[in-house]
Image: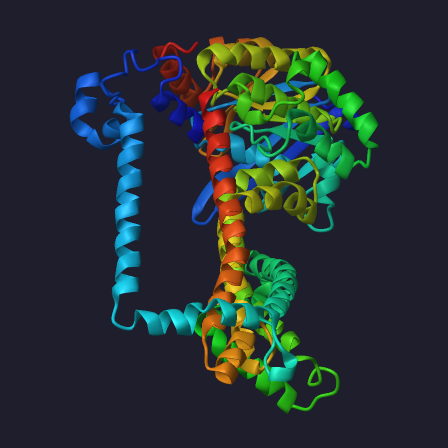
Amino acid sequence: MDDSDYDGQQGGPLGPGGPLAGLSGSPTPGSFGTTSRGPRLLAGGGRRATAISTASTLVVVGALVAIFLLAPGSAEVRHTFFDPHDMWQSFIGNPKAGYYSVGAAIWLNIRMFLVAEVLILAFSLIIALIRQSTGPVLFPLRVLGVIYVDFFRGVPLLLVILAIGFGVPALNLPVVSHQPLPVYGVTALVLSYSAYVSEVYRAGLNSVHRSQVAAARSLGLSQPAALRYVILPQAVRNIVPPLLNDFISLQKDTALVGVLGAIEANNAAQIYGSTVFNYSSFTVAAILFLLLTIPLARFTDHLIERDRRRRLAGAVT
Amino acid sequence: MTEPEPAAAEAIRIEGLRKSFGPNEVLKGVDLSVATHEVVCLIGASGSGKSTLLRCANLLETADAGTICLWGSRITGPGIDQNLVRRHVGIVFQAFNLFPHMTVLRNVTLAPVKVLHTPRAQADEEARALLDRFGLLDKAGDYPDRLSGGQQQRVAIVRALAMKPQIMLLDEVTSALDPELVAEVLDVIRELAAGGMTMLIATHEMGFARDIARRVCFLEEGRIIEDAPPAELFSNPKDERTQRFLRRIVDAGRL
């Protein structure tokens, strides 16, 4: 329904020259020139615009590099954070010298991220469905859901990691208190992130119109079948960008598990720094994290753009 | 009912149906019966309870009081398998409500495959046959947002028919359509009526109701005010409220 209204605004059969031209505010060449100069400058001289933007980029980047190089402590900083020898040494590691390979340690971050991601997707969906449920029988569960989300969104992730990582082993229970450190780290990540992601899911479920449920149920589909085949696919499609955004954040936050003593990239870099007294290892860790997050960020942008194009294509016809 | 009919021929029997939304009582005791193969149209102003009546008959809304029976079997009250009832009673909505993330073909085959467990190949074949019958076969692979409103509504009808319902409920199926698209949908409904489909139709298309219905019911404020064959109801309405409603329709140039 909204789409068809939108259609009319966009032109459709009436078009910019139709009777609604004045109403829909279609720009005439004259008004375009006065109201939106920015786009016009760029569109006017493509090559010139490219030249200008290249030049301004060079000036800005050049100024920043100059400040960095000319600063009184520049040589010191370059040696401490960007020493190629130390960067390489920390990347490959040397157990005999008492430090770990940052390059190897990032694998732990990747593994923790992958496991946590799958668990978060499943667990947060359950929480979202509980919070969306309407039956009176599930009332206590709904209350629990609200408390859960409020609590874990409110407590800093670092505290959750510390509480789980030190608290659960201290309980001295069979099995659960005797797990490797990354297990506690992943547990804390899942608990904390599921609170956020369940809200994203909930927004997605709410974005699907109630009439879709009615249509599915009217065909004889059970409530779970309607959810699975009709509601969830549409909900998930709507929330892919915010979900990926949260996962980019999750990739970085695996570094916090280092506080427990697990040898992930950040902790390995810290050990290198306090053993060799050079912090180039942190630069290596930063570069490795960027190599992980940037592809996912670009992929997210790609999905958003594809979705936008698809919706526009749908509106044109 | 003025004359007794054999129970088996009575597809829908509604007695004393009441439904409230909060303090707002939408249905205030509706009695209605539809015979097998009969087409009954519900007319009345917006808010008179036509849609709610249809949604109750499909169990999308739970009646507060009263009974609904299909071929003598009660479907209201506890212990009713809603999904089983809905297999036999198809409903088509004003806003089409197609599934936007599925192609036309998947829209049509979803329920047969998931509910009736029809093998996919057979469901596809039956769906294509239905789409072909209503001139939509070339749209089978398209997504709903590529279709015109009239095409979408025809697909919605095909989707309901794919479950092979014995009764179809149509809830103002042409109200959301541009005027030039109304005819193609009404033609589909005429074909269904000609094929003997039992239908209960809420509509604002008075001319259509007069053509297709064997009986027309006028609803106002949650009650059926008048229930008569169309020739009688439209040209010689007995109740003063029906006369007033029809006068407004005529004044608006819609009859």
